[in-house]
Each structure stands twice: as structure tokens, then as C-alpha cells.
Amino acid sequence: NHRLYAATAAGSILAYGDWLASYQPFHWLAEFYEIIQHKGGFDVIIGNPPYVEYAKVKNTYQIKGYDTENCGNLYAFVMERANYLIRNYCYVGFIIPISLPSTNRMLALRNLMNKNFSIIYTSNFADRPGTLFNGVHQKVSINISKKGINPKAILFSTNFLHWYSKENSNERKNLFTNFYYLKNVINSNNWYKVGKNLEINFLDKLNDKPLKELFKQNSQFSAVLNMRMMFWCKCFILDKNSDEYKKYYFTDEFTRNSFVAVMNSSLFFYFWEVVSDCWHITNKELCEFRYNYRPETDSQLSTLAILLENDLENKKGFVGSKQTEYEYYHKKSKPIIDEIDKVLAQHYGFTDEELDFIINYDIKYRMGSELSENDNEEDETE
Image (cartoon, rainbow, N blue to C red):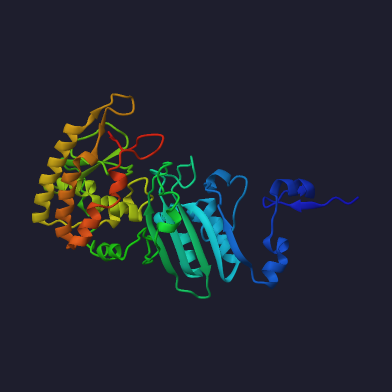
């Protein structure tokens, strides 16, 4: 009656049965020896991995030697492991959060995929007004990638897809037959969420200095920006009594007002959907959006920023709840926002077609009467 014992990573000794129950070991080569050793891996791997922060499970289970450890989420580890379990020229497919194509934290995972897969398809899905999974408000990407030998990855992506899920709407029914994969540009920061060649062309025109370079410290000229966004950016000259707003300072009134105009533009909203997590405005978007000071542009934008703020104030609605005092309705001020975009189009040298695309971008959902079947989330709150 010999008892089996196992040494733990901490150096203690456990009875083998206790160790097995506690550590639940799993070894791919032992479990799938024929597939991995003799066939070179699996032909297809598909899944919907857990979207769980590593910090929440680290006391129970730890990974070793993963390139994606700094990504900090279990789904990144699953995707990295799949890279080593799939055969060359075969496919992996995962439903994962929108953070894969969009956030700095997932850069290590994007780099790993760029190096190991020859073709990457990424379709990107919003959670407003319709959801991909009923009752679950989760912005997701569906990633399908082909393993290659010493590949130079080719990326194909969709734009950030919105749709209505109402019973009398065919948008959800036809969702997977109507979107288009565009051959995209892989850069060091993002996989762009774009669906038309026109977008690649005018994104290249945003080549001024980073917007963040407008910011200064210890100035009397300030603006407040709501760091949470859905269909309209909320940026004001006057302070707002809300923790969702962050204050920025500028050298002068014209620069401050120009910033307010740019942030409320449809152009910035479009750019934000292309590069962001589509939930918050972060330092990343303020660094990557480009706008350079020009006196003639700033003068026009300054006038429009004041006009827009006055219009928003005149059309706001009183709420008086603990969460907010007023609601702001940016869609009711869309004609002024369009004028801002016309000035920006001249600034960047957009064509008429490119300007028309920006002014009408996602207009069906931004101007729609409701953004969800269950709650009206079109209102912009203070």
C-alpha cells in the first residue's frame, strides 16, 4: 500500500490524491498525444473563452511563460495557447471582447497573432441598439485566423456594426450576410474597425499633431470632457457637476473652444469607434487623433463651439435625479455639429464624398428614436 506524493511549486509535499484534486493538472500532449505529436496539432479550434481578469483567479491558478501575460485576461491566454495547438494552414475561431482589436493592453496578443497567422478576419459588433447575444450587453469581435509558416499577416476587418433587434426589423436576421470584410492596415497600435476603402484614404489625412498636445497646465482656460461615450461625445466649455467629466486646460480661449468643437464633431466620434474600446474616451484616443492649430480654422471652430453650447443649453431637459440634473440632446443640435465637420473637412482636405460619409456616419442609430428595446439611452446626461 504505497502512497503517492507530489511536490508543489511552493516546495511542500502533498498526498497525490490531494495534489490532483487541488491542482487539477492538464497536459495537452498527454491528453491528445496522437493529434499533437504525430499530426502537428488540431485542424480547427473554435471557442468562446472566459472574459475573466487574470487577477481574479491568480491565487488559484497561475500561468508560466506566456507572452500575453501582461494582457491580464484569460481570453488572451486561451488564444495564445491555441496558436501552439493548431496545425499550420488550419484555422482558429473565437468570440472575444472588442478589446482585442482596440486597446493598448492587448498589444502583445495582436503582435503574437500578426507573427503567427497568415490571414486574420475580425468582425466587430456593438451592443447598442441590438446585442449579439440576447440580454448580454457585451461588445465583441469574432476572430477567425489561419495559421501560417513565417507569415506576414494580412488583416481583414469590418466596421463597428450596429443594428436594431426589434421583431419587425430584419437587421439582426441579415447581420451576417450584409457586412463586408475590408483588407486593413496593421499598425503598431490598432486593428482599425473599418469597412470601406474610403475610410483608409481619409484616415491617412489625419496627420497633424496629436490632439493631446493642445493641453496645458495651470491655465484659466478649461473645458470638460465626459470620458464615457456612446453615440455622442459630450464636451463643454462650462463645468459640469459629474464625476464622469475630466477637465483639460489650454493656452487661450480659441484653442479651448476649438477642442470643444472637435470633440463634439462626428469626425471624432467616427475616429473613436475605429480605434477605441467603444465605451470610454482614453488617453489613447487623445494621442492618436490629430489636430494642428491653424488660426483660420480655430476662429471658425471657436464660434461654432459657443453656438453649439448655447444650443445644447437651450434644448436640455431637467431631470433632477440624484445621478443627474439635466439631459443634453446632441442629436437636436446636429445641424451645428455638421457645420463643425464642414470646417474640419476643409482643414484636413477631405473630398465631398469623405465629408458626406462623416456627416452621415451611423446616422440611423445616432438619430434614431431609441437605442434599445428596454431603455431609452439616446439622451446625453450631465
